[in-house]
Length: 269
Image (cartoon, rainbow, N blue to C red; front, side, top):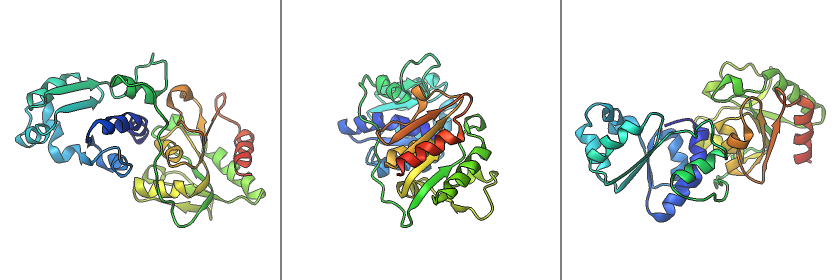
Protein backbone atom coordinates (compact mmCIF):
# COMPACT_ATOMS: atom_id res chain seq x y z
CA UNK A 1 0.00 0.00 0.00
CA UNK A 2 3.07 2.24 0.17
CA UNK A 3 5.16 3.92 -2.48
CA UNK A 4 6.52 2.49 -5.70
CA UNK A 5 10.03 2.14 -4.30
CA UNK A 6 8.80 0.22 -1.26
CA UNK A 7 6.88 -2.15 -3.51
CA UNK A 8 9.90 -2.76 -5.77
CA UNK A 9 12.06 -3.44 -2.72
CA UNK A 10 9.57 -6.14 -1.73
CA UNK A 11 9.54 -7.74 -5.18
CA UNK A 12 12.45 -10.16 -4.56
CA UNK A 13 10.37 -11.58 -1.70
CA UNK A 14 7.32 -11.81 -3.96
CA UNK A 15 9.39 -13.60 -6.57
CA UNK A 16 10.37 -16.22 -4.01
CA UNK A 17 6.74 -16.59 -2.90
CA UNK A 18 5.63 -17.10 -6.50
CA UNK A 19 8.10 -19.97 -6.83
CA UNK A 20 6.14 -21.79 -4.12
CA UNK A 21 2.68 -21.18 -5.58
CA UNK A 22 0.42 -18.59 -7.21
CA UNK A 23 0.42 -15.12 -5.63
CA UNK A 24 -2.18 -12.36 -5.89
CA UNK A 25 -1.50 -8.78 -4.81
CA UNK A 26 -3.77 -6.30 -3.04
CA UNK A 27 -3.06 -2.60 -2.65
CA UNK A 28 -2.62 0.15 -5.23
CA UNK A 29 -3.15 -1.75 -8.46
CA UNK A 30 -1.42 0.77 -10.74
CA UNK A 31 1.84 -0.05 -8.92
CA UNK A 32 1.21 -3.72 -8.28
CA UNK A 33 0.54 -4.41 -11.96
CA UNK A 34 4.30 -4.18 -12.49
CA UNK A 35 4.65 -7.34 -10.41
CA UNK A 36 2.07 -9.12 -12.54
CA UNK A 37 3.79 -7.98 -15.75
CA UNK A 38 7.11 -9.27 -14.36
CA UNK A 39 5.65 -12.65 -13.43
CA UNK A 40 5.87 -12.20 -9.64
CA UNK A 41 2.09 -12.50 -9.27
CA UNK A 42 -0.87 -13.77 -11.26
CA UNK A 43 -3.24 -10.88 -10.50
CA UNK A 44 -3.33 -7.44 -8.84
CA UNK A 45 -6.39 -6.04 -7.05
CA UNK A 46 -7.11 -2.50 -5.93
CA UNK A 47 -7.92 -2.36 -2.22
CA UNK A 48 -10.98 -0.15 -2.80
CA UNK A 49 -12.52 -2.71 -5.17
CA UNK A 50 -12.72 -5.42 -2.50
CA UNK A 51 -13.78 -3.23 0.45
CA UNK A 52 -10.47 -3.50 2.30
CA UNK A 53 -11.39 -0.56 4.55
CA UNK A 54 -14.19 -2.61 6.14
CA UNK A 55 -11.53 -4.66 7.94
CA UNK A 56 -11.27 -1.76 10.38
CA UNK A 57 -14.95 -2.11 11.38
CA UNK A 58 -16.98 -5.11 10.22
CA UNK A 59 -15.66 -6.96 7.17
CA UNK A 60 -18.12 -6.79 4.28
CA UNK A 61 -19.54 -9.92 2.68
CA UNK A 62 -17.58 -9.09 -0.46
CA UNK A 63 -14.30 -8.85 1.44
CA UNK A 64 -15.01 -12.10 3.28
CA UNK A 65 -15.62 -13.85 -0.04
CA UNK A 66 -12.47 -12.35 -1.53
CA UNK A 67 -10.16 -13.26 1.36
CA UNK A 68 -11.75 -16.63 1.95
CA UNK A 69 -10.24 -17.92 -1.31
CA UNK A 70 -6.69 -17.82 0.08
CA UNK A 71 -4.77 -20.28 2.23
CA UNK A 72 -2.28 -17.63 3.35
CA UNK A 73 -2.32 -13.83 3.58
CA UNK A 74 0.80 -11.72 4.20
CA UNK A 75 0.34 -8.07 5.12
CA UNK A 76 3.05 -5.41 5.01
CA UNK A 77 1.41 -2.27 6.35
CA UNK A 78 1.84 0.38 9.01
CA UNK A 79 -0.15 -0.34 12.19
CA UNK A 80 -1.50 -3.53 10.64
CA UNK A 81 -1.29 -5.82 13.68
CA UNK A 82 -5.01 -5.44 14.59
CA UNK A 83 -5.93 -6.49 11.06
CA UNK A 84 -4.46 -9.96 11.41
CA UNK A 85 -7.27 -11.23 13.59
CA UNK A 86 -9.92 -9.70 11.31
CA UNK A 87 -8.38 -11.34 8.24
CA UNK A 88 -8.22 -14.69 10.01
CA UNK A 89 -11.90 -14.32 10.91
CA UNK A 90 -12.65 -13.98 7.19
CA UNK A 91 -11.69 -17.62 6.75
CA UNK A 92 -7.94 -17.37 6.04
CA UNK A 93 -6.10 -20.23 7.81
CA UNK A 94 -2.68 -18.56 7.91
CA UNK A 95 -2.10 -14.83 8.38
CA UNK A 96 1.22 -13.00 8.81
CA UNK A 97 1.37 -9.27 9.57
CA UNK A 98 4.50 -7.12 9.41
CA UNK A 99 5.30 -3.39 9.49
CA UNK A 100 5.29 -1.94 5.98
CA UNK A 101 8.82 -0.55 6.35
CA UNK A 102 11.87 -1.78 8.27
CA UNK A 103 12.36 -0.28 11.72
CA UNK A 104 14.80 2.61 12.14
CA UNK A 105 17.37 0.29 13.76
CA UNK A 106 17.24 -2.16 10.82
CA UNK A 107 20.84 -2.91 9.98
CA UNK A 108 20.56 -4.23 6.42
CA UNK A 109 19.16 -3.33 3.04
CA UNK A 110 15.41 -2.80 2.87
CA UNK A 111 14.94 -5.60 0.32
CA UNK A 112 16.45 -8.02 2.85
CA UNK A 113 13.83 -6.96 5.38
CA UNK A 114 10.94 -8.29 3.31
CA UNK A 115 12.79 -11.55 2.68
CA UNK A 116 13.63 -11.99 6.35
CA UNK A 117 9.96 -11.48 7.28
CA UNK A 118 9.30 -14.67 5.32
CA UNK A 119 12.30 -16.51 6.77
CA UNK A 120 14.20 -16.25 3.48
CA UNK A 121 17.80 -15.35 2.80
CA UNK A 122 18.98 -12.66 0.43
CA UNK A 123 18.58 -13.40 -3.27
CA UNK A 124 19.50 -11.75 -6.57
CA UNK A 125 18.64 -8.12 -7.23
CA UNK A 126 15.38 -7.30 -8.95
CA UNK A 127 15.29 -7.53 -12.74
CA UNK A 128 12.33 -6.61 -14.93
CA UNK A 129 12.24 -7.56 -18.60
CA UNK A 130 10.71 -4.53 -20.30
CA UNK A 131 10.61 -3.70 -23.99
CA UNK A 132 12.17 -0.22 -24.45
CA UNK A 133 10.27 2.72 -25.89
CA UNK A 134 10.71 3.31 -29.62
CA UNK A 135 12.82 6.46 -29.20
CA UNK A 136 16.08 6.03 -27.26
CA UNK A 137 17.34 8.51 -24.66
CA UNK A 138 20.97 9.47 -24.20
CA UNK A 139 20.66 10.75 -20.61
CA UNK A 140 17.27 10.56 -18.88
CA UNK A 141 16.81 12.58 -15.68
CA UNK A 142 13.98 12.40 -13.16
CA UNK A 143 14.10 15.28 -10.64
CA UNK A 144 11.33 14.17 -8.26
CA UNK A 145 10.70 11.68 -5.47
CA UNK A 146 8.18 10.89 -2.77
CA UNK A 147 9.52 13.71 -0.57
CA UNK A 148 11.14 17.07 -1.25
CA UNK A 149 13.89 16.37 1.29
CA UNK A 150 15.10 13.54 -0.98
CA UNK A 151 15.42 15.73 -4.08
CA UNK A 152 18.78 16.85 -5.41
CA UNK A 153 18.34 20.63 -5.90
CA UNK A 154 16.58 21.40 -9.17
CA UNK A 155 19.27 23.91 -10.11
CA UNK A 156 21.79 21.07 -9.96
CA UNK A 157 19.81 19.08 -12.50
CA UNK A 158 19.68 22.15 -14.75
CA UNK A 159 23.43 22.71 -14.40
CA UNK A 160 24.01 19.05 -15.20
CA UNK A 161 21.98 19.39 -18.40
CA UNK A 162 23.98 22.50 -19.39
CA UNK A 163 27.31 20.77 -18.85
CA UNK A 164 26.20 17.69 -20.76
CA UNK A 165 24.99 19.86 -23.65
CA UNK A 166 28.47 21.40 -23.87
CA UNK A 167 29.77 17.89 -24.46
CA UNK A 168 27.17 17.10 -27.12
CA UNK A 169 25.14 14.88 -24.81
CA UNK A 170 21.37 15.11 -24.97
CA UNK A 171 19.22 15.17 -21.83
CA UNK A 172 15.58 14.11 -21.65
CA UNK A 173 13.49 15.02 -18.62
CA UNK A 174 11.13 12.33 -17.30
CA UNK A 175 8.17 14.04 -15.62
CA UNK A 176 5.12 12.56 -13.96
CA UNK A 177 2.16 14.14 -12.16
CA UNK A 178 4.33 14.74 -9.06
CA UNK A 179 6.74 16.85 -11.13
CA UNK A 180 4.21 19.30 -12.56
CA UNK A 181 5.53 22.03 -10.28
CA UNK A 182 9.12 21.56 -11.49
CA UNK A 183 10.29 24.22 -13.93
CA UNK A 184 12.48 22.62 -16.56
CA UNK A 185 14.52 24.76 -18.96
CA UNK A 186 12.68 26.32 -21.88
CA UNK A 187 12.81 24.04 -24.90
CA UNK A 188 13.80 21.01 -22.82
CA UNK A 189 13.11 17.60 -24.26
CA UNK A 190 10.57 15.86 -22.01
CA UNK A 191 8.67 12.61 -21.75
CA UNK A 192 5.54 12.36 -19.59
CA UNK A 193 4.63 8.68 -19.09
CA UNK A 194 0.93 8.11 -18.49
CA UNK A 195 1.47 4.93 -16.45
CA UNK A 196 4.23 3.10 -14.61
CA UNK A 197 4.42 0.60 -17.47
CA UNK A 198 5.06 3.50 -19.86
CA UNK A 199 7.67 4.88 -17.47
CA UNK A 200 9.41 1.50 -17.40
CA UNK A 201 9.62 1.48 -21.21
CA UNK A 202 11.09 4.99 -21.29
CA UNK A 203 13.67 4.00 -18.67
CA UNK A 204 14.57 0.86 -20.57
CA UNK A 205 15.30 3.08 -23.59
CA UNK A 206 17.81 5.22 -21.66
CA UNK A 207 21.55 4.89 -22.01
CA UNK A 208 22.02 6.57 -18.61
CA UNK A 209 19.48 7.55 -15.97
CA UNK A 210 19.99 10.12 -13.20
CA UNK A 211 17.54 10.41 -10.31
CA UNK A 212 16.95 10.75 -6.58
CA UNK A 213 16.14 8.26 -3.85
CA UNK A 214 12.80 7.47 -5.47
CA UNK A 215 10.62 4.71 -6.79
CA UNK A 216 11.42 5.71 -10.37
CA UNK A 217 15.13 5.29 -9.65
CA UNK A 218 14.44 1.77 -8.33
CA UNK A 219 12.44 1.11 -11.49
CA UNK A 220 15.33 2.36 -13.65
CA UNK A 221 17.72 -0.03 -11.93
CA UNK A 222 15.26 -2.91 -12.28
CA UNK A 223 14.81 -2.49 -16.05
CA UNK A 224 18.59 -2.55 -16.50
CA UNK A 225 19.63 0.92 -17.67
CA UNK A 226 22.79 2.45 -16.20
CA UNK A 227 21.46 4.18 -13.10
CA UNK A 228 22.92 7.12 -11.16
CA UNK A 229 21.17 7.26 -7.76
CA UNK A 230 21.68 10.56 -5.91
CA UNK A 231 21.47 10.46 -2.12
CA UNK A 232 21.46 13.21 0.50
CA UNK A 233 19.70 12.73 3.86
CA UNK A 234 18.59 9.11 3.37
CA UNK A 235 20.89 6.12 3.81
CA UNK A 236 21.85 4.31 0.59
CA UNK A 237 22.96 1.29 2.61
CA UNK A 238 19.26 0.72 3.32
CA UNK A 239 17.41 2.40 0.44
CA UNK A 240 19.62 2.41 -2.66
CA UNK A 241 18.57 0.34 -5.66
CA UNK A 242 20.71 -2.74 -6.21
CA UNK A 243 22.34 -4.18 -9.28
CA UNK A 244 25.56 -4.13 -11.27
CA UNK A 245 24.19 -1.25 -13.34
CA UNK A 246 23.77 1.08 -10.31
CA UNK A 247 26.13 3.85 -9.18
CA UNK A 248 25.28 5.53 -5.88
CA UNK A 249 26.48 9.11 -5.39
CA UNK A 250 26.25 10.71 -1.95
CA UNK A 251 27.48 14.04 -0.65
CA UNK A 252 27.35 16.39 2.33
CA UNK A 253 24.64 17.48 1.99
CA UNK A 254 24.48 16.49 -1.70
CA UNK A 255 26.77 15.23 -4.46
CA UNK A 256 28.43 18.01 -6.44
CA UNK A 257 27.35 18.59 -10.03
CA UNK A 258 30.92 17.98 -11.20
CA UNK A 259 30.98 14.54 -9.56
CA UNK A 260 27.66 13.50 -11.10
CA UNK A 261 28.79 14.81 -14.49
CA UNK A 262 32.01 12.81 -14.31
CA UNK A 263 30.14 9.59 -13.49
CA UNK A 264 27.60 10.09 -16.27
CA UNK A 265 30.36 10.68 -18.81
CA UNK A 266 32.33 7.69 -17.54
CA UNK A 267 29.38 5.33 -17.80
CA UNK A 268 28.22 6.71 -21.15
CA UNK A 269 31.69 6.76 -22.72
